[in-house]
Image (cartoon, rainbow, N blue to C red; front, side, top):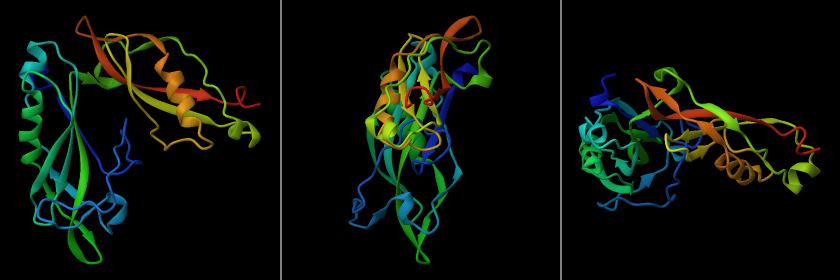
Length: 227
């Protein structure tokens, strides 16, 4: 993909959706601007189906060396309109505005509940200058991976499983957007794993000879920690 169009979009329709880094919850009794009931993805019979997903061009992200995400909350209405767009996280240089305009052009098949079309709330994430493992020339190299602390509950239940953490490994060495692609682990281990992941030291990924931000997965074996 051309660098000038290096923007990607994820539609977070549920907390179990693949590729999710962080899922934002939506109030069960939320109503839209026209007072119509707005449902969560878990409350409908058939979720809204995305048919067309325009992407912001993102020229200013390349020109100003910006990498990060614009996160929007929106309603995919029963009438086929994208409305009630609000900014959860924004970026400078007009990237937030570009993302909002792209979101307005989404085409979709509305959600269905009990045989009728309904409105569904979603979180939209537009990523700029962020790559996956198969898009970089040199992948992230983990230098130090601190082990998580086992919770008393996990130890009492003799938890010995493996947990995969997915995170955004930034080119400046920061770890952001920590999540669990297979769902949060049991026994309140999510907090411990997130704290451990935030302390990871790594050598950033590279593309075309420069350091870039990359999504990566790190596996933790809790067998020894939770003995």
